[in-house]
Structures are given as C-alpha cells and as structure tokens.
Amino acid sequence: MPNPRPKWIVFENLAEIAQALGHPNRLQLLESLAQGQHSVDELAGQSGMSFANTSRHLQILRRARLVETKRRGKQVLYRLAGDTEVVALIGALGRVGERNIAEVNRVMDDYFTARDSLEAISREALVERLQAGLVTVLDVRSPDEFAQGHLPGARNIPFRELEERLGELPAAAEIVAYCRGPYCIYAAEAVAALRANGFNALRLEDGFPEWKAAGLAVEVAQHP
Picture 1 (cartoon, rainbow, N blue to C red):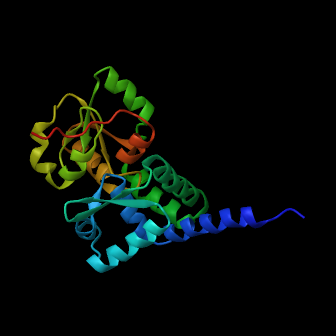
Picture 2 (picture 1 turned 45 degrees about the horizontal axis):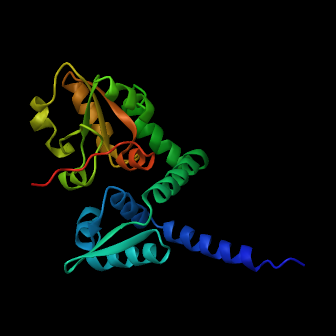
Picture 3 (picture 1 turned 135 degrees about the vertical axis):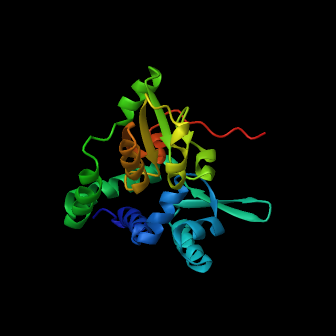
C-alpha cells in the first residue's frame, strides 16, 4: 500500500492556512498589509481593533506563514510573506465567494454594480491608456500607503479630502480611481463624487495589490 503520510502532511499544512484565513479581521489585516508594511499600532488604528487583538490575529497569520516580520529599530513591522501568492490566494477566495455565496453576490450587486453604471476598467486597458497618455490615475488611499507603492504617475488624494481638492484634477481628462482592492468602497465613492462634479471617471477593476501582484510597473515615493 502506498504511504498516505506525505499527502496528509501537505493537507495538514494547507488546512492551517485555510484556518488562518477563516476570520474577517484577519482578511482585513491581509488587505492592509497588501498595501505595504505596517506596525501593529498602525494596523490596530486602521482596523479599529485593540492592540492585543490585532497582535493575536497577526500571530495566527504568521504561524500560517502568510505574513512575516522585520525589525526597524525598536519597531516590529509586518508584511505579506510573498505578495504575489497571498494576493492571488485572497483573490481566489473572493471569486469563489462571489460565485457560491448569495450574500456576497447581493452586496456586490447592491453596492458596486448598482452604484456604477459603467463597467470598471481592466488592468490591461488601463496600461494601454497610460502608455498613450490618455488618462489621469487617482489613488484615493492614505498618503502612507501611497508612499510605499502606487501606479505609475498616480496622483494621491485620499478619499476624505477629495471634495476639497477637486481643483487639483484636470477637468478635461478621463480619471481612473483605485484604492485597496476589489472590495474597497473608496474607489466607487470617488467615482460617484467625481461624476457628480462633471468629471469623466471610471474605477479600476481591483486595486494596487492586484496591480503589483500582476507584475505591472509600480512607483514608490522619493524621500529627500
């Protein structure tokens, strides 16, 4: 009889990864870390969780080797353990959810589809428009996330500042907004606000992590 042990070892470890993904707070943390590295304090502030709860969830993700740490002085920073693979894993989970779970489908239809009469632009189409100089790209994430990486030539106006800073955007240009990923509401909200103010605006089909994971060009902020 063949030895079933090697397969069982693989399945055991895959099950640990699946268990680590099995909490909405941990998925939220992975989305944050897909934007760039963060300290526990920063992640706690973004998620609304306590420091202790954030740290506990991060340790579960670390044991599953979905995140890793590095030290900067006295500070411990967390980051994804393999951007491409982890972002692809989360993307696959989302696609299965959209296909199989009625509640996920309802949220997508009621929020994203209902709010956006125009189809989101694909990464491939955006690359072509960028190369032709036909579009202005708007990053509505936080300045810290923008500094760690963004689409080439993107302008950073956090969503909460958009209404006050509309004058910084070219009125005649097509604008493509993006944020943290396919379920981030800020890109859809930004497009709605831009259209209400007379701009020609679309949203990217997903976000910065998926763009980077696809191997497309990114820029980082230049520090003095």
